[in-house]
Image (tube, rainbow, N blue to C red; front, side):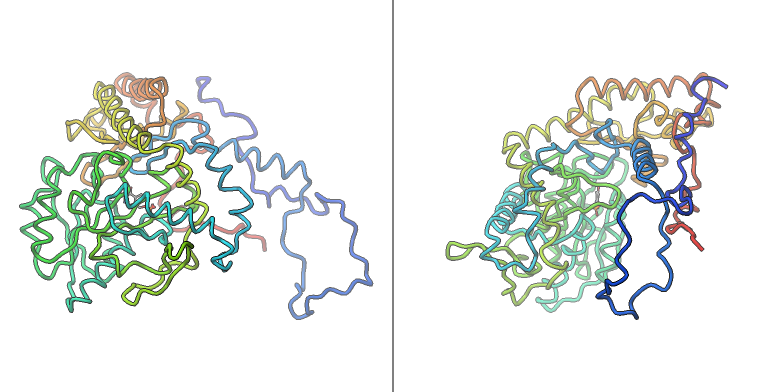
Length: 490
Ligand SMILES: *Cc1c(COP(=O)(O)O)cnc(C)c1O
C-alpha cells in the first residue's frame, strides 16, 4: 500500500451523533424543573415518552460537528469548477450586510411604511436587473432558477390565453438544462426537442422547421450549456415571433454576458436570473436561491404579485394587477439573497460587472487552452464562461470521466460537472469563474494534466481513486432511490 492509500485516521469514520449517544450522558447542567411548576402546555399535547435525542456531552457535540465540517469542501477551501453552476467566491461583506438587524428582524407582514428601506432595496435591485438584462420590468418573487422558468412560462401561457390562444408545445434545444423541459411540462406544455447540430449552435432553420402556431415559444440558454454563444439568436427569435410565439431566455449563464450583452436586445422576451450564480450569493446544499424574472413591456401585466412599486414618494407592495398570474411564493421571495445580490452589484459597479464577465470568459478559455493537451474537446472553438471536455482520450485505457473526477478528489479539488450536458457523451464540464487567479487555474490544470499522465502510465491506479477522500465511491443510484433520511431509533 502506498502512503497515499493510507487512511486518514479515526476522523475518517465519523459515526452519526445518534451512534455517539451513551445512556445517561448529558451536555448541560440545567437544574430539573421545580415539581410545583405546572406546564402551560395541555397534557394531551405532551409526550408520553422522552424524545429520542442523542445523549452526548458538549465535547462530543463540538468534536462531531467540527469533524464533519472538516470533511466538507467549500469555496473557502478551494476552487469549485462545477460547470453550469457558477460557483464564484461570495465576498464576506455581503454576508455581513445580510445579517444587519434591520434586515433580519423584519417580519414579512410588516406594514410597508415600517419597511421602506427593505422595499427600496428590492425596488432598486429590480431596476438594476432590468438594466442588465434590457427588460422593462422584473419580479423578485421566484425562489430559484427553475422556479423562475416556471414563472416565466406561466406568464407566456397567460399572455397567450389573453389572446384567446391555447398553444400546447414549447421548443427546447438538446443543449438545454433539464429544468427547461421540466418547467414546460409543469406548465402543461409538451417539450419538443430542437437539435443543435454539429456546431452546437441553434440555427434559424432548425427552429423554423418546428415552430408553428401551436407552439408557445422557445426556451434558449445563452451562452448554451456547451459554453457557446448562440450567434443566431436574433434570427431564431424572429422566426419564433413571426409565428406569434415568445422567446424564453434561461439566464443561468448570464455571468458570461453581464455588462456586455443585454439578452432582451437579442430578442428574448422573458428571462430568469440566478442571483445565486451570477450575483455571487452562495448556493448548494439546498440553501436558498433567488430566480428573478425580467420581461418586456408586452408581458409586464402578467408578472406575479405582489410587486414592489414606487408611488407618491414611497415604496409599497402592490397586488393591484388584474392580469397577473397571481402569487408564486409566500410573502416576498428570499429577501436576504436579494440583499447579498444588491450588495454585490453595488460593490462591483457597472464596470466591475463587465470585467467579471470578461474574466470569467478569459479564465475558461485559459483552461481550455491548457487542458487540450490532455483531454478531448468535442466542440473545438473559443468558449464563453465554461468549457466541455470528455474522456475520449482516456477511454482506450479503460478510464472514464467518473474515474478522472474521483481522482481529482485525491488532488484536493472538487470535480467539475460530469455527464452534463447530455449532447456530449461522458462530458467533463468546467466553469472556473472569474474569482480564480492565474495561480489557482495553473494548479488546477496541473492536477488535471497529471491525471491524464497517470492514465497513460497506470490506468488501474486512476480507476481505484479516490484514495485520500473520506468516502470513496458510494452507490449513488441506491442513495438517490432509497435515501435513508432518518436514523432508525426504534
Ligand atoms: C442552474 C441552472 C438552472 C436552474 O437553476 P436553479 O437555481 O438551480 O433552479 C437552469 N438552467 C441552467 C442552464 C442552469 O445552469
